[in-house]
Length: 427
Image 1 (cartoon, rainbow, N blue to C red):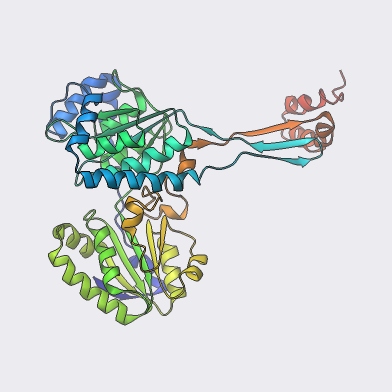
Image 2: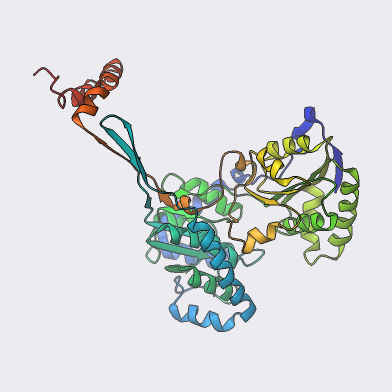
């Protein structure tokens, strides 16, 4: 990786990262969406044959296929899924917000109630790798929130079936319906419905550039989580960090995608050099070597700062998807962090823990989105309507606010709706 001295006056070049430029495929994806809206199941089956090289008769996964998948899954993987589910459920139950009400003023009581959305579609990728963990991360918080209908879609494998691991994970997590469809056509089907797939109110889950473009185009007709791009990690480290641990954390993100972004930001030159040596050694023998080397060549950097405060400044400007803090005083550093998708403290908190089973969610904002968005959570599937009850005395006092403002804005019926209740309408 390149070792670069941080320069606050030229930071934009340092922060180069891959951004999923969906503009290049919007026309293609719009055609797919239009075709699915018009031709429904037929269009999906044709796209599945074209893109996935599979002919599908029944889009919906049967109960028999799900039952069969348990026998095809390694016992260790099954047990790991069950243990992960317990942690993810526990964490996401703690995210449920509480309903509340308060006396805002005399005679004015207001508050907030919590209600789940009715239906959600969880998109599970199936390209470079199989992701049963993403099923858990998207379905479990929706289930805990109380969503009545949870649908999952994932592209079929060459045998015409979805991976057993994904089917088992979906079943254990509580999915109501699973469909063998991927890509932009899956997003279109979830948004507008077909003969086989009823539309949903919200779509969540990561995907490739075509999925991301489709989510952008359907947003407004259906809600989405956010536009997700390639994986990212930024590591703030001082002399107390372990170069080997850092190297493995960087490789674990780089192996996701040739466009993944991996940054080490440190005030210690020895840590920078030793980590770089470890990365060089490990990347040459890695299973996904080609992906890792391309990723690190394009978007891998080691940034040397004058001190840890400057490293924090770099991190907050970058707003990484994953942030690891490996310093002598992680808690103090944490108080100064303003932008990050998910944060990992100390030498024994690898991103992989959050990816699979510590409980936190791994569906996170990328491409700087962490400066304004949070990751997927139980609250992503909840609505918070406000409620108020006002007495006549309370409305009388409030009329001194509502009436003059409404009349100033020319909304006389607004004003009159208050006056008629407090006997001041004059007719």
